[in-house]
Length: 211
Image (cartoon, rainbow, N blue to C red; front, top):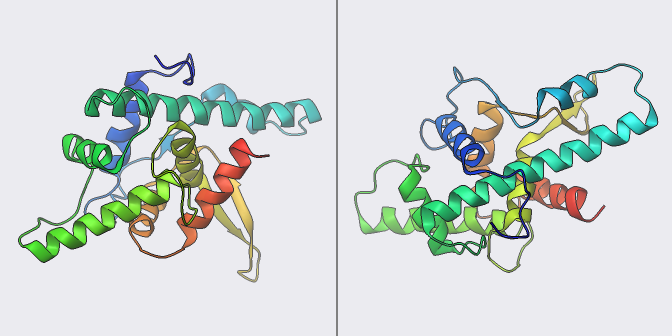
């Protein structure tokens, strides 16, 4: 295993993550609402997070443990992707990513019947790849690594909050990826513009690795 990956990362966890989120989308970003949420945190984390009147040390532990569990999950996904693509550098190119999608049936686009549809499909996949690889920035190294994927998982958990006047007040994290939030991200990742998932990816990367 790469020395840059968590000692707690494992193939089975990465496999479970992809299998579940792949089922969350029926086709072209339509959520499978009957599927339950994906828990990205442990029961022990949730127990402490739900505790009332937490001490300052407990609040810090909730934040630190959340980030650690996100990294463990992202590193597990890297191991799974490496096994499927044969790329053991844990840094994945666009070609690696396309190979991974084809091998894991992770794409729910309609069947492609002509050259134009194929070109449009490839453009959307490239857009999706670049947003994840560059964590929402306009440019970057165009390689998906464990930090990029940790930011992606974190972004999937970012849910907007609004006040009684429907004014946006910020994001919350509850350790769950819902079919609706994943389907929305699935669609936004393929939009060739700076959008909400781009913003979330940038915030997620900064919160995880630059704060």
